[in-house]
Length: 339
Image (cartoon, rainbow, N blue to C red):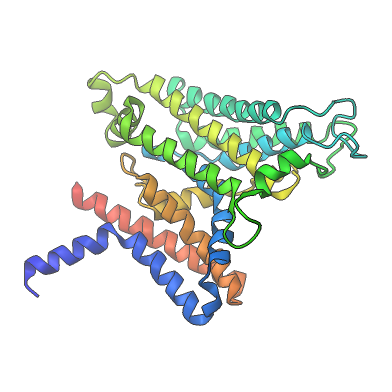
């Protein structure tokens, strides 16, 4: 193999490392237990990945601008509680709002997404207008959102009891499927995640907001000089991220059949990890939807696959941590090489 071929192979592996790792993980688990390969397993992994994908896509908006968002998980939890509290069956004995009639499911769903959007908007204003570093701004927001959620969750007559008894129509959103009842059915929640992924791909690649997002993350000073309204774009980006967290919270409540104020705890760290492993640069300006999806799938395969073959959850944490550190180290190395 000559030097040119070796360089080409090295470039191929560096550009496709995430997909190679995913394939190797699947092969390794399949060797340990051949029953892992099957349509049912794939559907279960996709089902578990659906809400995580939506959260990761929201986090990716912020990361690509060179920021971060630690409030994502808590916004997911608040949106889950808001939607679940208004979508209980009328005959459920422990309703959050005893006198509230059954609402069309679209009303609480939109309300919960708007709640997420509002907190995302607040994050954007704090970062863009008050120039508070995103880490600090969203750290404070994370604590505030959890406090708001806990107050809401502790309202009488609920008083911090898990919210259950969700309407069948709402639960169907998270557990229903298209197709015959069996192996080849496609869950609604997976279809929603695919549609959201496509919309985000369009925003990233075919809109002015997407181009501005990459420009801000690549060099915020150059973006300012080129005429981009950085503050306005950052506010839009954080608001969109918040709306995606709100949607993920709604789907998580529908999928699990309930909600508590602790829903979404630490989800933001999983989302950030999936983005980084999927090629979203910690320095900003770099990231693709397909890489984010692959990053989420890698962690879903680790969680589901290693449990499938009986590997201890503690080993799963160690493996996940090693992958995260390796991905960040690789990203920093590429950044330094460019400099």
